[in-house]
Amino acid sequence: MTTSFTHDNRRLAEAYDRLSDSQFQGGKRLVDRLGLAVGARVLDVGCGTGRLARWIAEVVGPTGHVVGIDPLAERIAIAREQAGAAASAVRFEVGQAEDLSAFADESFDAVCMSAVFHWVSDKAKALAEVRRVLRPGGRLGVTTLPRELTVASSVAPVLMPLLQNAPYVDKVDLSGLAVASRGHTTTDLISMVLESRLELTELHVMPRSWTHATGAEAVDFLEASSFGNLLRIVPEELRASLRADLAAAFDTRRRAAGIVARDYGVLFVATRV
Image (cartoon, rainbow, N blue to C red):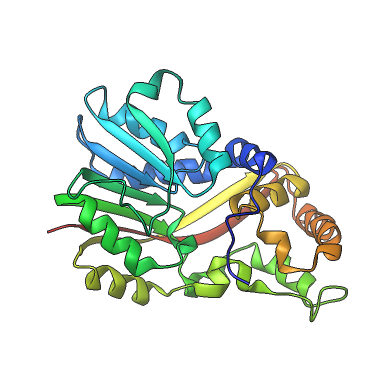
């Protein structure tokens, strides 16, 4: 199994838009590292429902321009619906990181890939495309989850014990989740950036957290942020059971502040020299 973009639907897209505050805040921190100037041209790759792209449009002002692309048509539809007053400064298109042929060489001052790079199948091709569309001196900002940091996630201690017992044991296929099927270490990521002829200018390990009121809401977020792939790690007849068991397991960790999950990711900035 490989990560599929075909399982998304309107329900998941709306859930992601509603529950993705943590990723939105992380995206804003990433954009801050890009040092965008008023009037900048920015490409937001993996823009989802467009929350970050609309915020970037405010940063670059009326003389700037933002394009958001995402392979998930339902999320692009929501992004377009919510563009509102920003519609003149930001546009949204269905597209993937590996194919930026819709954009001319050196057409952007910055490219943002917030919480998306680990989902990209051909990372080397994506980086080559990013370099092509960046102007000399343009910057790429990425947040991602390297393979060696998955053990620091507080989701894994909830999910993995369930999968190691009946009725799921021996019926699990984790390859549908990108971090499991094609995860890369931080060293791998650095090598890919350098091989793409981008200059690595910043590299940070960043703590991340998200909070939800109930276990069911936590599962909704995980399913929406994996665009329908999470529960597909087990056969169809077990998915409703896994959803319920996972929600119950999260509920056992609920405290006064809700259910708080934490992990660590990598933020890097690279420049086209």
